[in-house]
Amino acid sequence: MLRVSLHRLSLSALCSYPPRSLSPRHQTFSFPQLRTRAIPMSTMMDYSTSSDLTTKLLFRQLFEKDSSTYTYLLADVGHPDKPALLIDPVDKTVDRDISLVKDLGLRLIYAINTHVHADHITGTGLLKTKVPGVKSVISKASNSKADMHIEAGDKIYFGDLFLEVRATPGHTQGCVTYVTGDGPDQPTPRMAFTGDTLLIRGCGRTDFQGGSSHQLYHSVHSQIFTLPKDTYIYPAHDYKGFTVSTVGEEIQYNPRLTKGEETFKSIMENLNLPYPKMIDVAVPANLVCGLQDYSAESVAATSK
Image (cartoon, rainbow, N blue to C red; front, top):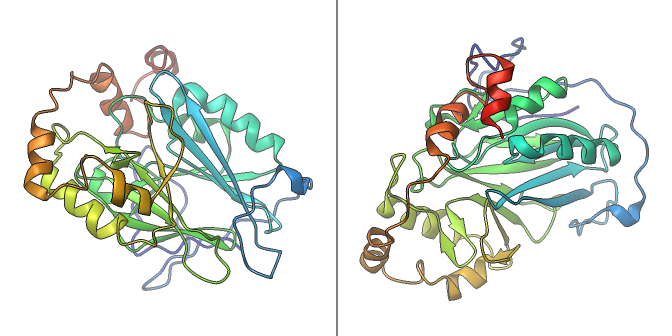
């Protein structure tokens, strides 16, 4: 039984699925069991310290070079269905991601975004057209279409593992950070998928899409820097060759967020960054699951 514990669920005309029976406070979605082939243990990255070896996290960090975007694949390979999810998929690398999921014998159930991206088109819509049963997920505050709209405190279950949702606005109004669960049966150290809110030795810009340097500063300090210091930081982008950091490292070495708030705001106001070259195409598409409301040929053209 797969569980998605959410306080609320929003449906859109574009990304919809049949409603199920819901409890008053939480919603539970059931998926039929799927037979999958066994995966050699040597291919798995096991972050679990539990003595119960039936709970395992498989983790892969993937990269799209044109936008320097990281996509993350997580799966519970200790569960019979081997349910998996993708965080921040990119349209250009959807076929690569699907091939990897198949190679590893996983069942992809969620395609999740940390926010409405401005530098690339999300792959969630294409994944839904190519992989039956995949549900798209984004924050309610993003005002974007998706199968499921999440808010702070929600938990996204995949098998016996889950991601905790933390609201981290500032880069955009709808930014969230997904953090692996806290508990004896959850992987340790914890992992935080911070989107563009917190980068390795940096942070996302705050000068468009409702951004706010004040909000971003407080989001990081209250929602991310309060996590255990050994928590891994996995951002949506990196432009200098870094792949991972930790909360402790960023508290000590982040050149922007180690400063006081007024200094931070001054830094952000004087970045003088160029207008994102993809923003006029990416944002409208990403507001509708990465699929514009026109022909598939037009969608393919904008993806190139």
